[in-house]
Image 1 (tube, one colour):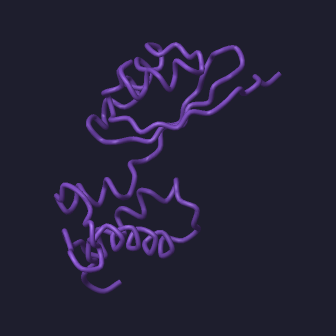
Image 2: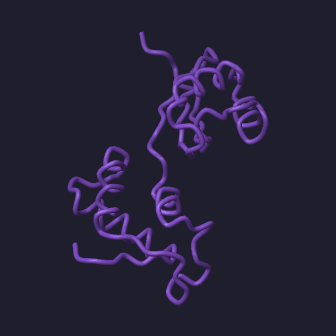
Length: 143
């Protein structure tokens, strides 16, 4: 028989760096999850992605056990890594903070495809390009 789900917790945690301090501790403690057990499992599964921001969806069951799914890093974080910018532009239509090529957009789109709600790489590329535009990052070259 399947376990009864009591809730979900969504967090963004740096790979290999989960600890019981906020925001992880309070979010999991309020659901009654063993925080140290989550931190150990998360850090073990994300050692190869150390330092990267990783979204994680934690399924909490009625008996206080849990499962979690680790997603790929957000597009915005990947764009900032590529452009070496500290943050997106506060006026994205006037002030540009960086530039990327369509090849880089395609690489991000193909890696993020499993987490996106689109069916083709072209659609994923336009979603990534839209995120870049809204952050003040220009996309150069031809598609």
